[in-house]
Length: 279
View: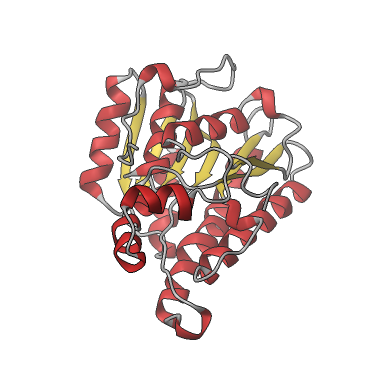
């Protein structure tokens, strides 16, 4: 079983015909230095959007920029700490100078495994600030730009999870933030008059550093192989026994941003291999 993070190949990218996918329109992507954020930034750029890629890791962010440019895309990287309100406002202003902000993908996130009774509150505060407050602030800052466009349209995609549908043990704050992102998407959509849409993307485990870095420690704790962790622990409830690739998730964001998703208003794209439906 191959449990490495896969490359982003051109042939795996969903490319859609959409007049709004043009260089004049800006797509902001957070967490663009690795994993799903990187794949979404590259995929949005490959679809003709000008991408403003946000991440705290400048070295990895520059790699993302080079990957997008190798595919003929336009991507500008901005180093930013999403827990710093002033810094977030500054990079949104910078992104607005690249064109009209049309799309926002809130993807940045971290994980901490602990039971509620043992969970460190400083980690709780960090996860809440990064994974729920920052998406709220970015939405607050970008919606006026979307409304000011010629057609008043825009879309905000939030990276949720199967953990926005079910709660598993030792991930209480991750669960809370993902449920919260569904509420944020529905709240934005309730106010957006069908023009400013928001949606969530909910997947099972994806081949990203966030997920893959958990495998060795789980294997050691459980006394099983890394392959068994993926097959029996991570994918145990899934009917598809292979983790998704980041670009497969990125394609869902691109679809959600496109003209083909105009009825995706506060909805959730659940691509989980049957994990939730058969839970």
